[in-house]
Image 1 (cartoon, rainbow, N blue to C red):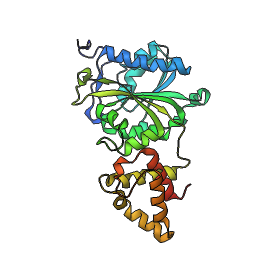
Image 2 (spheres, rainbow, N blue to C red):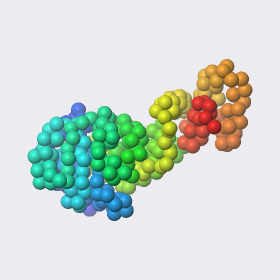
Image 3 (cartoon, rainbow, N blue to C red):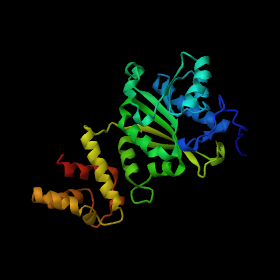
Image 4 (cartoon, rainbow, N blue to C red):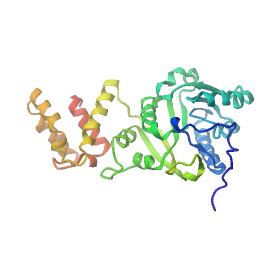
Length: 295
């Protein structure tokens, strides 16, 4: 039997018409909302402090059940209409439990939240707009040291990309970065009929739990992004062709480097005929460090 779906969005704390320009699709299934809220709350039972950041709370359909569970929230919302609505409803009824900030998440830093310094780390949740999902996930990578977990609603195909294995069609730059930085779990799928307006594709709830790994500097992080771009722009070519320009440049500066690179590759079980899209994240990281001269 299909889950009970609300009519006319009664799960909204206040009426908010979805803006296509902001990629808004409001969750409209009470059972799914409760399931997400329970998944988030279970993390607090393990980690203690009941405080989180919610990206794009919109009309408050998830925010309210989180508040009902005693969770304190910093809500980060770009849409001024939603900010006003949340302030008039949930903030008024829960003034000590929720704070709403009007901001573009891609321009916001967790450094701005003084509560985190007292809590050490927190949790980040959100129904991510489809058109900037990758950007927000890269943002989460950048600030992962502030968070114990991330629970996000994404397109089902994005969830599959994050969990993809080397050599599959879904495996790419985003997969490599996310799997280096996080343990990835796909918790459950959310059918498109659970949203208003109804999107063309199904969604999924994912959980990202940070690993200890991080790049020591912004420059190295940026260099890794460029390196993976080079690899996956030639994903179906043989590795010797995909990296020909980079290896040639390196050989001019330091003769013998090409031989050293293939020696390293062979240690990882990689040959010159291997395709870039079959390289595991740790091997890609090892190659990146080689080009930077990092042992």
